[in-house]
Image (cartoon, rainbow, N blue to C red; front, top):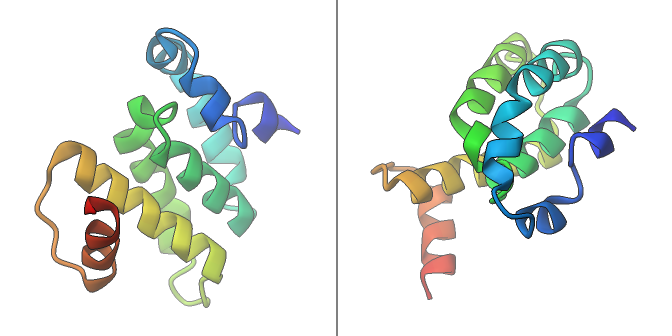
Length: 118
């Protein structure tokens, strides 16, 4: 339920709100507290947060969010990462790279770039 209150799953609707970036940034501490408490517990949280960060609404938190994900993700190194979580993280990296025009060499990212450049 808390994920829904933070806008996860409502990215398209949030992106239509004028100056949503300022609203999201004003809630940065709330998102950080949620990330600290919930990202280590469930892969689904990482997947949904990654999807949120890859959206226009989540863009203002994108770099911070990647750092918040990195901690729990590093703790999972020894475990197999779920396919859904991996896909959402790839999307997040793709959109971060694309929005900031960062050169990145990764076959999966390059395939996404070709797909969305058409």
